[in-house]
Length: 320
View 1 (tube, one colour):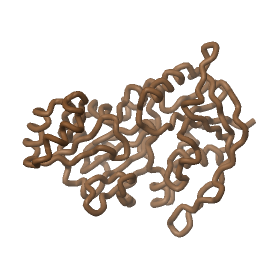
View 2 (cartoon, helix red, strand yellow):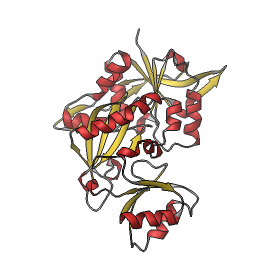
View 3 (cartoon, one colour):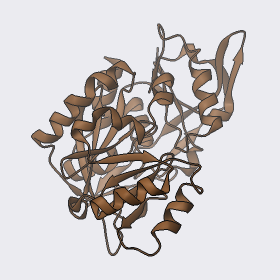
């Protein structure tokens, strides 16, 4: 009898099989003999104190690596008929809905709290997802972080930028590089950028010292249960200071250094405590800048550049 694994994702047709880690994980689950089912947060249901979902079984045609690029079969998936099933009937439920972490997302995590953990692994843990804002969570580990403040106060931000000379401002709820600004002392637009980002002092933001090593790349490391599995370097292109793949950063193979492993070891106890099993951390110049827990990506790029199959390792851990 096949093992059933459900993935809570964005609409399947909106995913890019050559890039999205969710597709890599689903392919690996299918290759391991599991039946893959997909659903969305709008299809969750609580009835008689139990959480159900409208789930659709799918069969995937895996991408193939051809001349160093992923080749996408057409069609790359076939979907069966929608069924309503209790989530407790699945071996695992992956919460892989992309940010933003808005009200609908939070309500979905409350639904997932009702999944019986004795029968079904929910990953990442719904409580862990609520706890781990992808910017703020890293502040538990200041020993491996660059200088950072979080505030809505313009004066504090201005003073920080003056002290550092250059800084990076990040919205606390952003994703894929959205809303990240480069701040520089003496910039006549500085006040305006702060006011817009903080909604005139009503919304806190994160401001970090600018790390010159960002020009050399922003390293994404994928962790499984606190252990690093693989890494990819995202390098800014042109005049762009952000290395995010969504902003045009090019990717390159990169090693996991001893410093990287020390950072992972620093995080591991907290990640395991909070049920954050599958995580992507960002490291610039040997400093931790973010901890990505909602739908961390990078697996396709790591596999393409290194000839690995990280999804197979994940499924061996999950189903072993």
